[in-house]
Image (cartoon, rainbow, N blue to C red; front, side, top):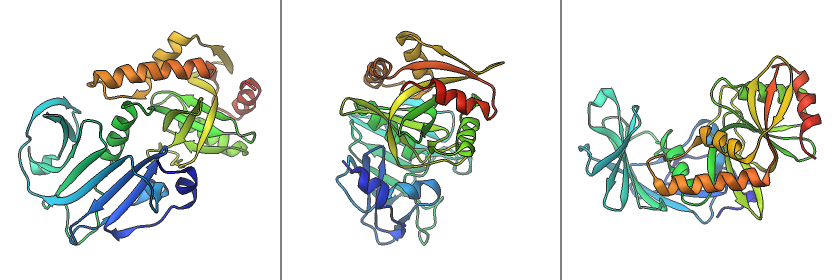
Length: 307
């Protein structure tokens, strides 16, 4: 697994590389192209998650391919650009666009535990002369989601912040709950580091629950590869005044599930995630934060966060 020093201090830029290494939530992804006509590059927030090297949790080969119809049994349709198929023990993602009809412009095949795979890029959508990012969203997030569900942790809709005392504060909520608003208020108040304003990864390491920033940010564009142990979990809700309502384990687990990114078509992934969230709520105080979206809530949070 990649070390934190690699994730935080060895970020590199890549323009037309034959290999890329990513580190997201201490999960290493190695991308390799054996075709001199296929080079890779990343743009935007994902650049902050590039590292020089390291032992990968999953290795993905990349190549040009030919358009073909899906093979295998379809087990999920996102209703958007991707569908998931089962082919023996493998899992096969097909990415389609109305421009190309029913034929995919990209496919990604992974083994059962998502530790190795192959991405095929199709000429009709990509120019061979230009570098490509084979895991272009949403494939990078889908890969991480499945790796997490195989015993590593979970991704949630949340804003994560680290205060001046090093305490990790997690603010969960669906779209419109106030995650980006909270991130901006915290940043304006100063003394905090925002890991993300939309998606946070949770993992249990060394007996603690850790939160990690991700590349998949919200309107505030907060995306950091850093991590912090969580001291307090707040579920966001708008109110007439600022108040904190403690939550018991069962409702807290239910609300974590409601805010999570889980492969719901995977019984094993669901079982693990549910058990993992039980560990989270047993190890971290959980409460609902009903708040008025102005600067006063920041001092209120600081006063009500558990020491």
